[in-house]
Length: 144
Length: 162
Image 1 (cartoon, one colour):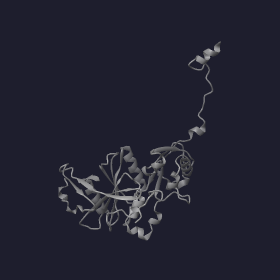
Image 2 (cartoon, one colour):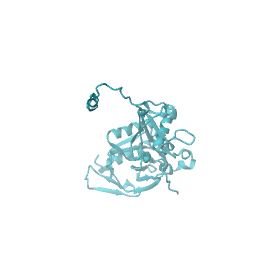
Image 3 (cartoon, chains in turn orange, red):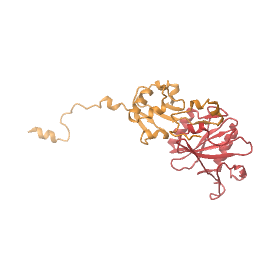
Image 4 (cartoon, chains in turn orange, brown):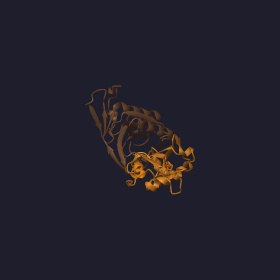
């Protein structure tokens, strides 16, 4: 006879073992700010979340949901592109070990394509053009 | 079309002259979605080069955060060419990462005339646009349009209202 009363009671009579969030559900704790030009990979979203112990892990994690994003930031040789700036909190990751930069929950990662350019003469030397950023280069480049 | 206050254009040209023969670079921020450049932010050219410019990465972060906090965006991104025309180079095009911005180029190759031109650079395609210089201090309706590289040398800078 007490069974139904217990069931109808708005609160459990005895505290049930508290349900803790399973850790794996709670690890997407790094905020990543996506620049305009890469928002096509995030459905237009400016801030996404991801997880990883290092920047490398984070970018792999992000790529699983935002396919192609990693390829815009990391070269085929597996290094961070020269003309993409990535920051962990207030630090440029180049001073933190680049892709090996360690990350912690609550960190904020900001990605900014470098703002750079140069006079036409530079192309002739190939000096800077050799390093031209495939990651920020638009898909179509006008032939001339 | 880029509409921009004469006082800002003057400040950009002054910055380009000051840094000549190195390339100068900077941003003019404006309220998000307004397409109106209101706040001139001269940036350091970390490359300190006559043929290349690059924002300093830490200054870049600071300025972009500041714009975010103020609900602004980079309406204009400018730089100078110091020996060549004010037209985006292939390098400029390959780096152009702000499809919503007006890319303003200033040539300082002539010491007595300014060459100011504005472009959209989207998906690697360069489109020149007219520059409308607003004389806010004189008469909001008195505007002059410059298209396709017309030199503002014809402009009487004494009347800029500064």
